[in-house]
Image 1: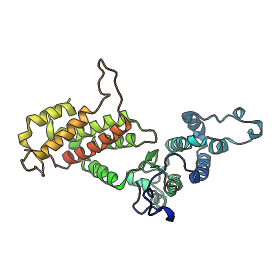
Image 2: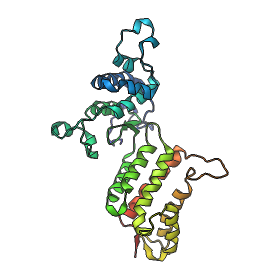
Image 3: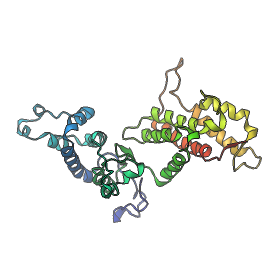
Image 4: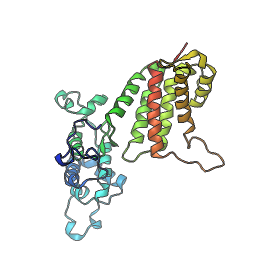
Length: 303
């Protein structure tokens, strides 16, 4: 999340692009990021080879000129990795770093913002990295569980998705919260997975709307729920009904239909199956967040 009071250089504060986030590894971030990789890799030596394999970085001495053969494996990972690979290295380290319980270290746990996600683990290596990313104005931040890099979300997006996830955190809304968070993570990952994001977005709405629209249909899908929506429209209500009394429900139905028909990878047919784009997936996640909120909080009710 980008803080409203995030620091920007004095010379940029009144510029239109003052809050533009930076993709890749900005020049000022490169050296300190390599330092973070070095210090983190020193803590978790046993994952270095796996990090290298995941990111396709060759750490073997014979791949370097003879004058570099004495450099240890940590330094090779941190300082001889191409700049374009540094975010991948960082992401892999976050994912593979062993987790240690903080239950007996409340003074450390209180420092880690990731504890808000109820992660009872030692993620203190995330704290300096988060500060570096924020100071550099990076497009990326650390995922809520501390295990990956994700693209930053604006405060409004965070507020909407968090409220939707909280509203859906009740037994009758199934796994809507989990699906919505997984959709968000996939859409805003360092390397987005739009197919997964779109699929999880639909599952989130299916979970949230099931109890309202088709509670007795075990195999209900968003498609069958749309059919039910049209059949029982007279029994459905929303707070803002519109001038004719039908516009409010029409908006909800239209959002559901757009999300359902917009998924291009769900079924195969005579035409080549097209995977969703990142932009489509992001829009799907935002549609899903609103729909999950509508159904889980009781905005859409059935008499």
